[in-house]
Length: 406
Figure 1 (spheres, helix red, strand yellow):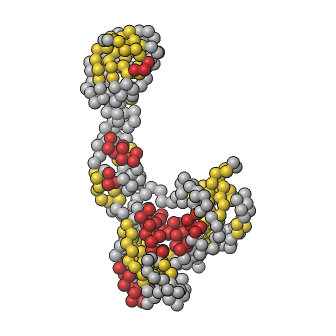
Figure 2 (cartoon, one colour):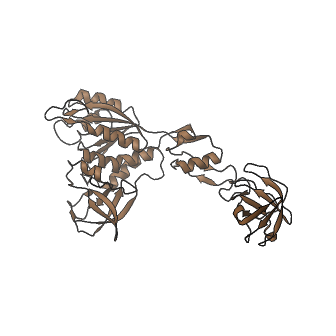
Figure 3 (cartoon, helix red, strand yellow):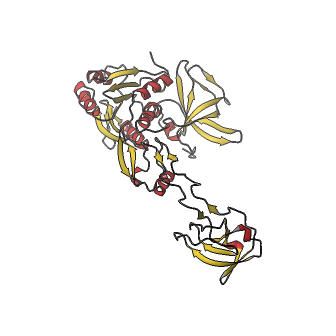
């Protein structure tokens, strides 16, 4: 009996472990997942600093037209000068430490420089153009939580805090095995009835896109020994993904050979369309995903089931892409009892976000996956959807890029 979509994903995530930790240099950690929270060892800024080029002043002295004696100069990176006293100012550059006694910085463009003095031209309010110690980060703050993706802003923060090595979750090593006598590799001469092994490459690209390290182990031919050899090798990796051979045909050997190799099947068949014959099992903490052979179903089941698992293994705080509410541009229908995944193009309209189908929804039409920037999720209990009905869309492209004429 096929299990519900949500139940299938829940079971997968329950059976997938988070990988161990490695320490990496700061720049090598970009794009990876932080294994431990980062606590600030100091305040940022470290001291009160100027946010403008200008003059450090006492606002009590700064009525428009006032002439102040300039008693010093502090460049960026300079050391603090003696305190600013009544009737005086200190020339200061952006990023320089603010001297004691001043409570504002008058921007250079709001002053008139003279030899040894400066005239204030505009009113100056207290605290203006000063970045105070700790206003960004206070010592002891958790600045980056565990599970965060290390992006350029995180790199900047970590560098500012003096971190040069980071604890990072290890990337999963993912074995990919395609099955079938009909398959040939890209570039090989294709005979009548043969099919290019595109799934291995789309899966490898999808694994890389979510941070894994793919290993293409080759094609398991339709005999037990070939299956046993390649599937057995795949179980030495952190994850094994197979493509095709998971249905009920005479040559669908994957589930049988995996069982002989000690893989415990968690479920077989999910109440979804496309992708119903997906299977999931585990051996010694190695998750095994047996995906359908149809290229569209392969990509969709990877997106909905494998991608969240790989992100979870890397310790990501969030493992499922955002889902938004969108109105359908045309009617749709489906079989009852299954969640249907509709390949759609999301775009902005005068009435809000709308979704149109990316083309013929037959699972043999791979071009719809090229066109789609979202997957409409049509719930199991419903059968008919009218134009204008609101549905959930699982975003594939967060910027909703549409390619005209695709």
